[in-house]
Amino acid sequence: MTIQQGDVLPGATLLVLGDEGPTAVSLGDKMKGRKVVIFAVPGAYTGVCTTAHVPSFIRTKDQFAAKGVDEIICVSVNDPFVMAAWGASTGATEAGISMLADPEAAFTTAIGMEFTAPPAGLISRSKRYAMLMEDGVVKVLHQEESPGTCEISAGEGLLDAI
Image (cartoon, rainbow, N blue to C red; front, side, top):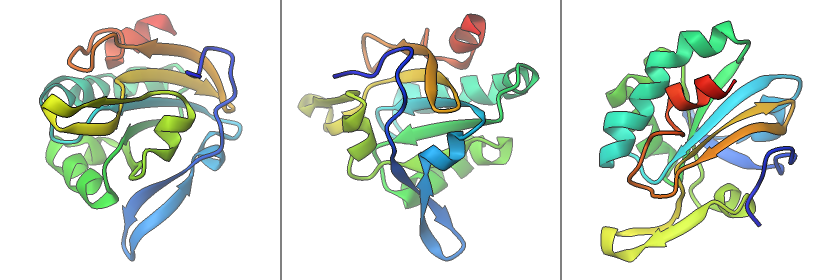
């Protein structure tokens, strides 16, 4: 079942590339007592993800902070090495956006956001969405109808809803 507004996000462990290699990150710990934005993309280095989705959150990061958002997290079904390189190449890491990997799609599947598009080579990937979390509870959820669209899930679209 797909996660909905008002639901509590299930516990999940994602990965980030640290100084010593891949490091586990507890999503629950990141959200405890905090206001967090999570946005997910179908794949690092893919067209709309790179040219529209990530840049929209870089542009709006300060506006989210002004609304009390403590952290912006980008999640993708990729490995932490790819997420680190992509975060560096897009400027997302330098902008302060956390780039977290869901390599087995465990988190993505747990919240009902997985999809597969064999013609595009996307197997067990994440739908495109953005959500505002407060202390682990979904307050706003914007899911795109198509993985190639980035409108309501863009930084500006989510910002307008909060």
